[in-house]
Image (cartoon, rainbow, N blue to C red):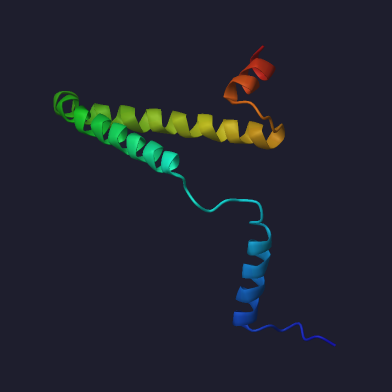
Length: 103
């Protein structure tokens, strides 16, 4: 009869085996194109952040509040898109969801 009391090391090993069994089929390496896209996104983001310095000086804290509000809206839009993906998976982009749900 097996004992139900497992040591923490055994529990960690069992959890690791369970997680590794669900990773089958995914590639864990990034290609050159992925790294380039991340670099381009970082450069654009840095440019937008540094370009906002003059406007932040002119507008004051109102610009920070506007950035916060826009960030919250973006978060909720992406959250809703994630809900749609879980509700009805599609091989298309967000345009296929807009076409299906908005007409």
